[in-house]
Amino acid sequence: MKTDQNYKKGEIITVDITDFGENGEGIGKTDAFTWFIKDTVIGDKVIAKVMKTKKSYGYARLEKIVEESPDRVRAKCPVARSCGGCTLQSLDYRAELRLKQNKVENHLKRIGGFDLSNVEIEEIIGMEEPYRYRNKSQFPFGRKNGKNITGYFAGRTHSIVEFDDCIIGIEENKTVLKTVLEFMEKYRVDAYNEEDTSGIVRHVLIRKGFVTGELMVCVVINADNLVYSRELVESLCTALGKDLQSVSLNINKKNTNVILGDRTITIYGREYIEDYIGDVKFRISPQSFYQVNPVQTKKLYGKALEYAALTGEETVWDMYCGIGTISLFLAKSAKFVYGVEIVDAAIQNARENAKINNIENVKFFVGKAEEIITGEYENGNIRDIDVIVVDPPRKGLDKIAIDTMLKLSPKRIVYVSCDSSTLARDLKLLCEKEYELKKLTVVDQFARSYHTESVVVMSKVEQTK
Ligand code: SAH
Image (tube, rainbow, N blue to C red):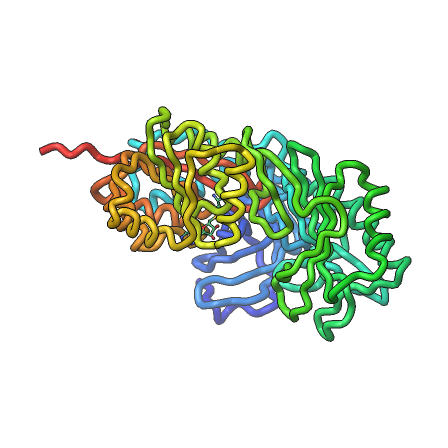
């Protein structure tokens, strides 16, 4: 049997791909040695070149596909391999959905220790069309051979793969990027250079309201102002027409990887665009957090609402509420919804969103969810909580949050999760004694990438004496 000593960098190996890794890369074995090979899919037999080895596993680069998996399709995007974005473009979409469903179920079994035979597992909710779904894109600008370019960062690097049409993004992106590049050419505005911090244009951020059709363009610059910005606005208006509702400059003079700086100057139209999820309206500024796939988000929140089983009499707490998307979506069916979020600006958005929708049975708090809720409880401000909804970041819930939830003892807990491994870990603790996992739905929010979104509901176990 071969060990790491036997594999040399550059060596050619033949591998059957039998599994997917956490980043959507193919996994296969030679003897007991495990290989991670990007751009391969389960069912492929490939020839690959050894890049790096550890004790029992290694990374290899795809050289040639000897036998194609029946689930392999031709990637739609010409830069699918070099771009750092989609990892599953070579996989048939139906196989992708199966893969995602299995990933979540396996996490619940392996990490959560669940026997899923007692859980109602619904069919994954896929997209009708797994392309053109992102309502937001941020394109880096740079220079190559004396010319301004834009595109995407190659995986794990900051070298730009030149490209103007990402097929998971909106078609208007191409028009915007072309207009900005022509403007830069005409007025001799250089793209930013990370190495010596020279140049002006760093990124262009584009957002669209899928329901309203409204478009926003925000140009991130390494300066306090952009000379000829009026001309830029005119060109964008000509190219995009009446859908263009907001053009802004964001000032970012820091030598950092963070895309947006603190200051934004609106140079055309409104400071925000508007969009709807269901019949709730949202105001979105360049900095606002907003779900990137609003069509699937509506389905996800629809499930969360169904799982919350509201009759109009319930008190609901939405922990980790962000700009209040879930809180406002649930408010019409609940007696009262409380939202807690750690980012002050998001809560300002949430309050504003409640106002523009005339939703009055909601209240938002800034702070750590676990602390705010405990405080309100100890002050006697909260009595009975019927439902708790959580939608935490990828790292999931911390121990204090879980203990708090158990102490508050709601009838149901709805957990929306963008990372099924932390979901499984948290469910294990929540379902140790007091709660029972009832239902699960996986919703595909990020087609062609390996990320999954899930929603589950747990019910309080009836105590029998
Ligand atoms: N459902 C929300 C988004 C949730 S994303 C929406 O659609 O807008 C997760 C949110 O949890 C983020 O906004 C993050 O700022 C917030 N967060 C992280 N840790 C937190 C904590 N300890 N207490 C409250 N909110 C927290």
